[in-house]
Structure formats: C-alpha cells, structure tokens
Length: 273
Image (cartoon, rainbow, N blue to C red; front, side):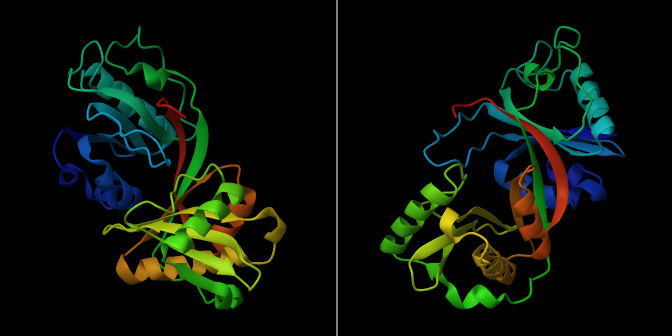
C-alpha cells in the first residue's frame, strides 16, 4: 500500500495513469493520495463548477475513490485508522472534508463514533449517482454537423445561455465562463441545442449539453458532441464528461460517440445548491 501527501507520482502506475486521475484530479489540486492493489483515494480541493456558486474556502476538501467498491471502503477505513483524514478527531486540523465521490456500490461505512478518524460525510447516504466518461478516439462525422457552428461572440454566448436555461437548467457549465468554448446547432430556425467544453491541458471536459424539448430526436446533440469531441482531441489527448447514471438517452449518445465509462461514482454535495 502506498500513501502520502506528496504528488501523484507517488502512486502505482495503474492509478497514476488512470484517466480520471490524469484529467480531473490534477485540476482540483491534490493534497494527498493513498492506494492499494484494487483502489485509490485522492484528497483534493473542493471544486464547484456550477454557475453562480461561491468560491469554496481553501480548507474545504473532497475525497475521491477510484477502483473496486469493497477495496475502496477498506482503504478509507485504513486511512481513517491511521488518522490521516483532515478535520477529524484524530487527523490534521488544516481542512475538512465537505464533499467527494466513491465507487458506486461501496459498502456503507460504520459511524464516525466507531472510527474517530473517519470524516462524518463518508458515513452518510450519498446524494447522487453519476458516471465519468472519456475517449481518446475522434468520432466519425455526423450528418448534422452542417448545422453546427462555434459560438464566439457575446451575442452567441447570450443565446447559448438562454438555450441552456430551457434545455438543461441544471447544467454545471456556464456559457460565460472563461476557458470554455461553445458550439450550437442552428438549422435556420434558431439555436436549438448547445454544448460547451472546459479547455484544459490534461483533457477537455464537455458539459452544458442540452437540446430544446421541441427539437429533440433530430440528431442535433449527436452532431454537437461529435464536433466538440474532435476539437477537444485536436488539443488534448483525452476528452471527458460526466453524466447522471439515470440518463439513458445520454448514455446511448455518448457511447455512440466513442466514450467509455472510466468510473461509476456515488457522491455527496454539501455546499449550497
């Protein structure tokens, strides 16, 4: 077992090269990492990409589990017993765990009273199930791409925000955010679907995917995802996205575009919603 508050290079190659580690962990700011043969834990800063959310404090942290559910539970309890989780009765005082995600299906952990070094958050019920997807293969051309254009101007971004507010009001992406690029689908009758991408050197992350209810079922989302994914892979080795596990239509869409599940998560969110 490896452990420590050092860089990700301290992890075994299996975990250091895991797609989620390569793309997502780095941007969150890694504080500590631990691993066993079948699971890995990463302690990061807390990041909330939802539009309008306040910037979390520097001492607000998140725990991320990768790998097999049972092994992740065992690793969490081992780290707790060694008093290495901050903000617990036996751990460091330089932060507190306010969120995180673990492999879906992980056994319920016993209470913090039984394990003083266990963050209380990890003993409560999770609030959402979601999947993290990625791809390194550019999708084939989609016939609807003729109607896709990049949204660059302020007028375009305003139109994207209006479209997204109706098409996907809970999207954790903001057309006005810096370091994002956006595309829209317009067949001559106005903007009916959009997709955005966070531009990051270790891998672009698609988000804000939404189609107006009246325009669904016409292939617009498929065309947008194909264009955005190919552009992402022109600049980075991997494109990624997250999706709530119950989104059957989204799963089919992303699978057709070549995305594969890198980790099934269950997670907690405790900051303002």
